[in-house]
Image 1 (cartoon, rainbow, N blue to C red):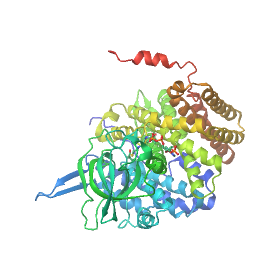
Image 2: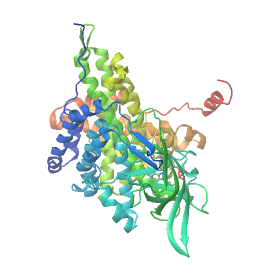
Image 3: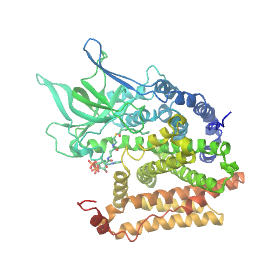
Amino acid sequence: MPFNQPPPQLGDQYQQDRVLRSYLRRALPESVLAAIEPELENMGRLAGGDLYHAQLADRLNEPRHTPWDAWGNRVDLIEVTPLWKRAEPLAAQSGLVAAAYERAHGRYSRIHQFALVYLFTPSTDVYSCPLAMTDGAARILAACGNRSLAERAVPRLTDRNPDTFWTSGQWMTESTGGSDVGLSETVATRVQEQGIEQGWRLYGRKWFTSAATSQMALTLARPEGNRPGGKGLALFYLETRGADGQLNNITVHRLKDKLGTRKVPTSELTLDGSLAEPVFGLDNGVRNIAPMLNITRTWNAISAVSYMRRGLALAVDYASRRVAFGAPLSQKALHVETLAGLQVEFEAGFHLVFAVVELLGREEAGEADEPQLNLLRLLTPVAKLMTGKQSVAVLSEITETFGGAGYVEDTGIPQLLRDAQVFPIWEGTTNVLSLDVLRVVTSGSALEALEVEAETLASAVRDPELVDCARQAQQALAHAAKWLSGARAELLEAGARAIAMTIGRATALLLMARHAQWLVDHDGDHSGCYATLIFCRRGVDLIDEQLNHAHARGLMEDRAQ
Ligand code: MFK
């Protein structure tokens, strides 16, 4: 018999997740953890068992678009994969959107929701995408003051009954730009008959509409006569089908042929007189859709850390099964060092995004003060951009930890890397979000709020090695503040990514140090200390004092490379 390598096994994804479980014990009151733990246990079992096996079996399936029926009628049917068909009712019943709006656990409700999402996401092939947009739409509609829209849509978007649950799209991107949304060309026309207003119709082409199977969408369009730019756009609500079941003057042209997230039926579509309703106001569309972006960016960051965790769970298990050069990989110093480097990046991202989730929960419970609101505004793009980059780097290394097997499709490993590549791209690329961070830190008091929070986190730490890590993190933040106050406009822009990453890594390091101290105090467990020390050594302050933008311009000026 030739040798056959035993494949990696995935166990119970809640019970085996030391980082998630210890975080929840520290962050939640005992009564809240006791109330939600059965749900987490159930989701962890499913994610590592039944759902994971269904996901592997579903690997070759993709969504299908049928533009015409046999008799020449335009139907634009989109059929999703079997795993997605299973994911939707599971998501509704598990309250993956609802838990945030039921607020059964007050300001802890977002932790409840996102802990479930974190377990669910890597076993459901990015079904988190429509859920993220659904959550973002519910957040906007619940607060928009448009009572009839809120009463119609919010109960459906937050429903636990799969038969009546709705998902929402977020149709922003046009071919003019996914980043510079103010260039959008879609026009909104007011329809009047005999002087009586009949509503609005939208005309335009949306170039990247994720999850076009949703029952509704929030989208941007320019009311006729409005000025150019994002301020001239307005935020509209539309339902994709009328009461007769027919599409709302929407033509789906094709599904996108993407590098990853291939189960997500992302479409190009044309709105040709689609009935729509302004959510509120007839301008400032970009500003008005921003709360949705901040929610979907949080989902993006949670998804990115959940993918890192999945890759690590498989790689760590595999290391104990794969023998080479006389011993399992789990006993080889260089392999262990490599895995530890990946583990700490995951832990840093985990603590950063759950800090955002805590702030979001406080905000929605009306318990956030001004500095906390500023922190939420700053750390949301920081967490999204940092975890997006981490997830690609970590999953690329994870692929390599399997050697040639990681490069072979039916192990399921390559799909993790391809899917992760979307996290730094959609919902704002790393550079676009770095510029958002730059705007926040140069126009308000968010950085001061972070420095105060850093002092609070540092003061919770007593172990001398952790104290040293916390000091390095505070020095990095002080360096960022000093650099920001001294640099000229072009240099500020050129250095924006380093600033954003430094803020992210320094904040994550402080959060890790605080958690590590708690683990030592409560459990005598030093795993958090090791993680903090290793992460600190990998580099926190990424600001380049020698940055000379003239060099980059000189190098990249328009000539043959
Ligand atoms: C797996 C889970 C996730 C899955 C989700 C999948 C969904 C996929 C579908 C998509 O990809 S949807 C498209 C995602 N697109 C983006 O994220 C857009 C990226 N581009 C930006 O974020 C640009 O910075 C932006 C469009 C906002 C720039 O547009 P503008 O017109 O130049 O806006 P400007 O002047 O920067 O901001 C307009 C206002 O909004 C300002 O307020 P004021 O009017 O009061 O001055 C800004 O302060 C405010 N604003 C912008 N971003 C904000 C914000 N406010 C709060 N939070 C923000 N993030």
